[in-house]
Length: 258
Ligand code: BGC
Image (cartoon, rainbow, N blue to C red; front, side):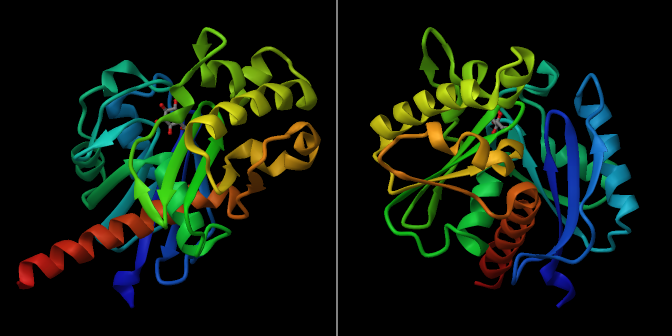
């Protein structure tokens, strides 16, 4: 049982959030704790915050799952759109592993949130193409075909109106340009039309902070695909990260036995 209780950490550009998760049900076993992301958000400063969070949650397990706001390949960050550029090429798993003294498994933050929705939320059992868009400091994406994740899709970085989509339609932009929910919603709707054209999805889920305010811009969304807020909202990233780490650890164990 103990080994199904995994700490999931959702690293974001503004906050680092974590909770201990029962990965067999997706339930939170502790409160969800949030610490401010240090500025500048460098590997060293963030590793310290992650260790602080792990301590504060009194986590006794050995495995931590981390959702990270970048392309993540083999545990390393490949990009750094909303964090310090010194992350590019840096080893997330090694750096957080060293500061916490635990085994860390990392994946993209939106991919982690998507996994939670598909395993435990509104995305469960959805056939065909499902895309989750997380709306926060940036725009994150998680793409699933028949429940299978395609890692690191980064659809927040497609170009539209001569700029990167997340510079046009993220929550950061809404705040920076002081857009009303309707004005921002119209931009986001344009973005969803692009996504629809590229992917012809069967379902679009929305995650991140702005998904909690869906009723404020729901009316201006007119894509043909069904659009739903992901009900796990702010906890999805931590749940999905913990679940993913557990799955990876299980696979490794099985391989060793063979
Ligand atoms: C990053 C993505 C991330 C998204 C949400 C984007 O700026 O490039 O990797 O998933 O923000 O945090």
